[in-house]
Length: 158
Length: 172
Image (tube, rainbow over all chains, first blue to last red; front, side):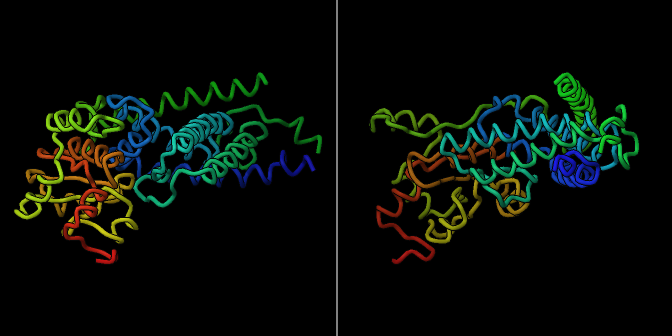
């Protein structure tokens, strides 16, 4: 059973799925920083003056982490970055739900479509778990430049 | 556990590098954003404010009363923007108002700049005196460069209650 969650097949799928999604989500935000800054301000968490800088840093971090996961470059560290970002998103969305705000989450840039809700939080927690598995168990399988010690001990054990 | 923190630390480094690249690209590209956003959020929401003080405060904050809104509507020289959800807009809105749901503004930016010139007076409303979508949309329009932006604080609630003309599915 453990083999399913820690094995390289699921890990590869998760890495490609999460990486592809991050890169896709980041693309519109990187192209239209003003639009993403508006989405950041809608959460009313980051101070008004810092909203542009925050939006800029976040969208580029998403792009980097996404592309690095897709190609398999420093895979586990890229998953670490994704883990930090999904944690931030989850907390941010949770605060809007707790404050009784219903806003478009801005998850995929200007595409729109999903409002902040408990369901969205659940989706993010799912992504967090997937990202954790990549971060913890990726052994460099089909990675361009894994950049981490291959966990041969784990791979051989199963 | 040690491995967990080393991957997280690596992730932080990746994010720092990515951010520096992003800031550099932003400074050379067209359509970049200022790193520090100037100005301050518009605030006309009147949670629990006495009616008298609310009126004097709102005058200084560039908000519009019901009577003034009706007068401006009759003159027909201002762009009226409805900041609520499309469903609420479809149900009923001030005739001629353009729907720009605040939280989906990024989606509506192209339409907005095509329909509403930046030098024209704009009045924004949402549900009523306690909603803040109109304030937030006013803030964003000022950031975008609109010069004359005001908020009709009474919103749909006061307008429809006053029996003024409406457009939409609402029974007349």
